[in-house]
Figure 1 (tube, rainbow, N blue to C red):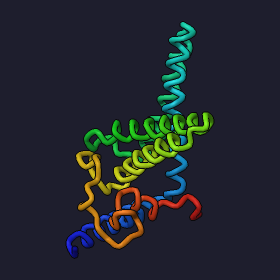
Figure 2: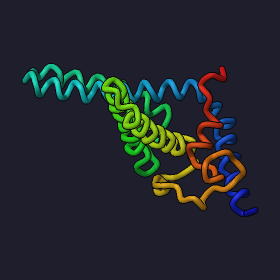
Figure 3: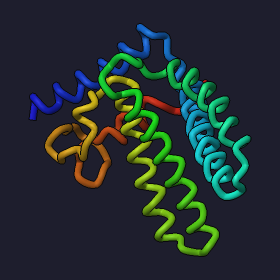
Length: 175
């Protein structure tokens, strides 16, 4: 039990240290991550519009949007650390898609389906933040086992997950 608590404390300290050392404004970065999600979606919509309309001008716009997205993502993710750049981009893209699917389910009155998809989106988004804050490395981006983090908390199994950690570290309302 002590070792597991120590592991958790080390992760929290690592996150707080990263926040101090890099002077991170996590609420600003949360906004930035959502902007990046939208830019990825715009790239996808430009692609599909170009294909559906057979107008190559849409493909030209993809490059302009991609350039902005790359610039913004570089402010958050180190491009030299393995594949964390691509992992991060795809985690944000998946999050945006899951939000859109959940929203469509809500509009169809499928509240349980929507809630399930929103929860999946939240898990994926929290994996992005775990990578961004270097709480995990790219090889750790997988399902969190119940015995990996263990402290007293109100989560159903009494253990902290990366989602719990990110929720406690990032509060967009703290300005």
